[in-house]
Image (cartoon, rainbow, N blue to C red; front, side, top):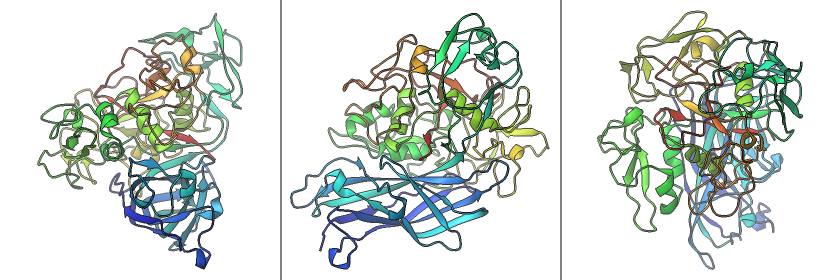
Length: 551
């Protein structure tokens, strides 16, 4: 009889009322060798129930589906021959057949395991839409690969992040408009059709090269190519032609709190702006930019602290109805974002993957937003219904046929809103403010970091995924990620991790998608800040999301 002892801790990821994913009933199964459930490979099945609303799969139009990226963290508590330690990333089986759902409630599941064992995508196996209710999902954890003994006493946490599949396809860069630094075909002013993920000529003016309107209007950094001077984009740069999964929503306050709660005290000290109990993430007595992320119990020496959400400042944490769990995370830096993505086994997206995520394989519309029109509706955000709750809503959402809903306003400076706030079971793409593939808030809410191609530093990015852990100092440690080894010089290529510094700079990263408090920068093709190394700290407008190349 194998004797791996698992103490399971469930992690429920509430994102919003109409679209959410919940994990519950976490346990482990399968240590009994005599029953043939386990073998010399030393594995266990981590079992849980998984539910999410408004799931879909279609074989026409976008021809895609939504999915959940599931990964597991564990911590050794003790046991004969076992040393108690910090949270670690569990290695899951790379064989899809090793994962199962015992009760699918009429919706057949599909599994797509990552080749590095970081996690598994779960999604519908056939066309359909509606709620998912899968009981006794079993993911095989190869705990022997993680160096665990059978006698170890272990606590596990299960995390689930909603994703959207972006299929392999041709797509256009640029809209044919005149946004700052907008992409074009040569110097024609027309969008450029991308038909592969190979090398690409940047600038130089020739037909079929990727132009940028001579970099006109860029701020904080200008592309190193233009109509007269060219560069070459390496084939290793993730251009966007190949399939990938994109986070359906921006990272929320709750998701970042869960991330912090698996870090050491030393790592927490650099990934949160405060380690003082009772203080908000921005070190303010009242939450700046609606960032209700708060240090609940301060770290003490080597003992990690506890973080949670308390938007209403009543010292009762993680109240679903008022504490802003589903509000888009703001006031984070590039090192904060990359830390979260590394920990989750994801990666940053590139500015070209951003454009594909917005418009898909469709013909561009001049000066369009993410929902495919050039018209935008700004709801009134000064008065919210159910503020801070899972059903938070603006008091005047748009219902027009062409004006898409977005979280922005020239008079609104309070902060971002709940992710997916305009989406319902019956909302159209425009009303929901959704991209062609169903990705939410790519236009508005918080500024999102993307890897740019206008510098040597950006072009050195190869799209490697996070490895599930940070270095001892709390920084991402993935080769060629922008800012690795402290790189803040755009003319210097990002390189392999040197074993000490990690991602503390941001050379090669820029901003896209616009923010909640201005009309500027929201259009898909806007590249005004695609190369901005000047902002190195935390800003209340900044958030982000991640992607993962499809298995």
